[in-house]
Image 1 (tube, helix red, strand yellow):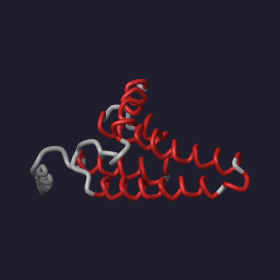
Image 2 (spheres, helix red, strand yellow):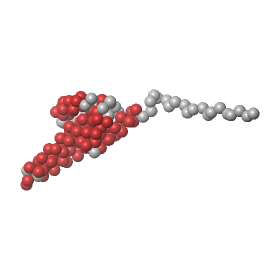
Image 3 (spheres, rainbow, N blue to C red):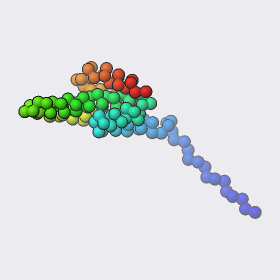
Image 4 (tube, rainbow, N blue to C red):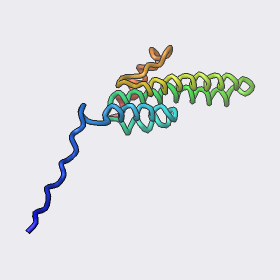
Length: 132
């Protein structure tokens, strides 16, 4: 009668705690900013258990959505001065790039909106806290 060999030892547990926790937050923050306010709105609800990801998603909605909305309104209302709306879009793209660079260098905190953060942080906090 032959005996069956014991099963092979399982893989050792990875060192450093739970794998992927920080990288998941970083990925979520990148995705929250990637498609402007639309992905921010999605990740506001998807990542509602991570306060920093939720705050960054809310900032995407407030800042990038605000630039988009102001640009659309100015472009459609001003007629011959529609170029002002396009300048707003360009400023929005600059902030989008700033946010994406911050997201790719994400270390687990809130990405600041330079120059306008003092005005938008209160709205961002209110939106982030409104989602439970």
